[in-house]
Image (cartoon, rainbow, N blue to C red):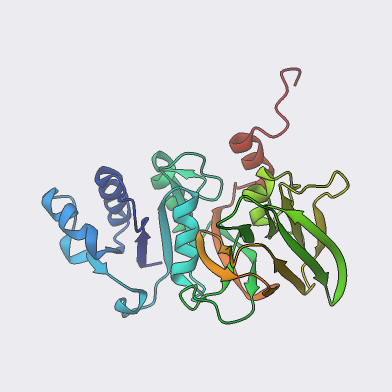
Length: 295
């Protein structure tokens, strides 16, 4: 692992001190480091003698990096991590999340743990966690990348009225939802928006999707778990001309009376973890799952 990209949020610049700390840690291991072009001047202005300028490079797009990338560090929170997944698309580059945000469920390594973690990682003591992604069929303008690590969401737009969503699985009608929207979640996304809407938590290795309605107006409707080889079709009708559709952090308006088809993607997100990583420990430490003063 000689060439490493540090990915940061496009809209919210990270703390320059955090960025410089990360660069210096990587350069202790004699690594070539790429940072976004918009941050290069801020780093140079610090005039830190410990930063090796001949090992620091800038990029604007992934195509600017004319050499194999071995690792991406997503420096920020979970939103930055998801952006990083969409940035590298299907390049099969492992991602390590460094949490400088709030929760840090995906970006679960703190900055003060980074140097120690890299000691192990650069000696080959790590694992790659291949996470299922989902795919939205059709021509939609999601930067030519109609995939999501967490979820696909349909939400009402321009109206306080509910929308109606017909759900079909493998061509068979399952239910009609009267709701504010619906979430199709991967196991990774089951701890995100779907969880907030009352969906269950799935282990990342579960070969399933979760279908979770948002503010459904029916006492008899609950989230549904289906196999991830299912073809999920959603037909929307509404008093409004448009609804909002989202793939992870990216949202666009789309015409109602449209049918959206979701399936398992052929590509995976590659999350890099130290060997000590355990999903259930993260669940307990980040979401306080199972917290009970009696335990």
